[in-house]
Image (tube, rainbow, N blue to C red):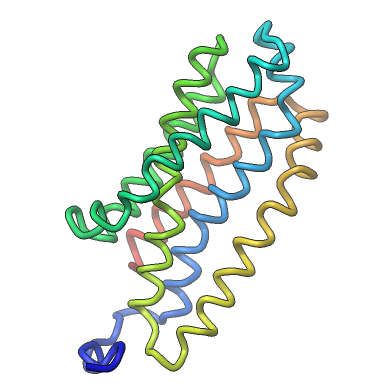
Length: 193
């Protein structure tokens, strides 16, 4: 059976492009957060009385937990359902962002980053799976191209945005900015996916 032939009769309730926007917001936030924290490390280390080597655990802990959950995404999506998994990931990532922002010690921040990485690790593959299911076969290439542009822009904006926020406000705001984006991503996914 050709790819997508068994889905020819199925049509999403909402516009596929609206679904694409809904599922692209969460991975954009996750990829942006990966690069935003890099420039804030000296401020985080100084504020939490950590050496530069200790402060790098803020990044390492996130990336390790992200890498642990990533290969399990397919199984988790099949077990819980893709929509539920996306909503769970957005919720976990957003709640962990609040915990990162309120952290008063390096250990607490690292634990919060591990939780954030667990929530963020599955976002990109689950969003891609939902995206592919929402578009007819002929338009999947265009959908993935649009999705990729959002994912490519995030790490480019990250260091600039992170530096500006850290210099003008506080390193804590690099995590707090995820909260409104996470809420919008959750509401859009809840409504359109």
